[in-house]
Image (cartoon, rainbow, N blue to C red):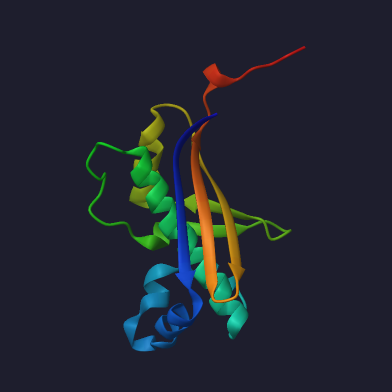
Length: 146
């Protein structure tokens, strides 16, 4: 595998909670997929922490993508954050699924090799954070020992 880019983002939970509470802003619906909103607690601090960590993951993906394009102009003017979806498996381990324009443009980073995003989410005290590493499967890097 080849590392293409690394991104990290931190979200201040009290400020993020205020943003979520402003229903007139439409922030939550414009940022999170229906699946993301359904996969977290229906209300309260756990919902805020979970959505903040997912928001940090979306921002971290954009930073990793930007790092992978160092020295070149952005691939698109603005990303629809709903095209970056945080999903979890049956044990709560997060992964990213990229859709639409974002998915197509991120895949262009590695010609024919599949691109994957590795993600780690965390929240503690007044912050949530995420780290994203973009990697490309590269058969030339594969080493097999017998």
